[in-house]
Amino acid sequence: MTALSLFVAGTDTEIGKTFVSAALLHGFARAGLRAAAMKPIASGASERDGVLHNEDADQLDAAASVALPNDIRTPFMMREPIAPHIAAAREGIALDIGRIVDAHRHAATKADIVVVEGVGGFRVPLDDTHDTADLAVALNLPVVLVVGMRLGCISHALLTAEAIASRGLTLAGWVANRVDPNMLYPDENIATLKQRIEAPLIGVIPHLAPNDARRAADSLDIGLLTDQLHRKD
Image (cartoon, rainbow, N blue to C red; front, side, top):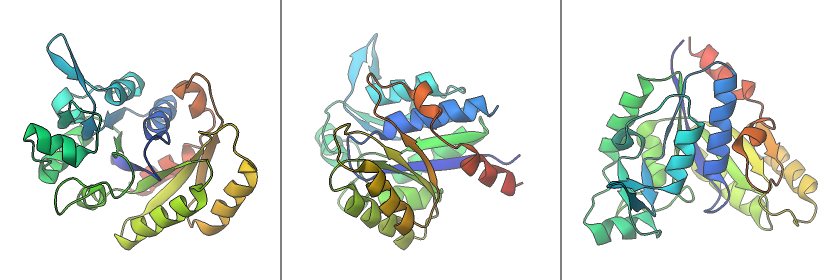
């Protein structure tokens, strides 16, 4: 069976990309797949025992069934929790897309499926000329879009889906993540998105307090993604 990789994009920051990525990893592991995680670019890290740690990357490590070396899982990790191109410039780091592509190529040899989490929204700058959409294109992966269900999500989701298509990428599916438990008429919002997004709804994750990626995996139809894995054979 040929390895499959997915690029997890979000409609914005703080809408649960890491949470959904971890839930996907748990779901793939339950399906008997060796699942690895990458968060190629992470802003916001602290040093423990001489090693930089990022909370999101640690969450992905905990959910993955295949461990990757830190420099493969996260080739670029910056200390300040700010926009990555600003953090990288302040630390004198060049966010080299080619290095990430090489790291992903290595990761794909170690697992049946690799979940690659983006950073922020789909068009977050990486330097003066490139953004995370360019990274997704360079990796040439099908995209899973995480929609944070809150007021304004319809426009954000449709604009992001349009941007994904304009780059020639495949939208493999989308996940509705109930980030705002007080959102009015969430089901109607989801119905509107189902009508307008030409990709399957993989699942609706309820608001969980505290977040529990294992429980969230129960809400995902992993088969909608693993079917693509089998079609590549």
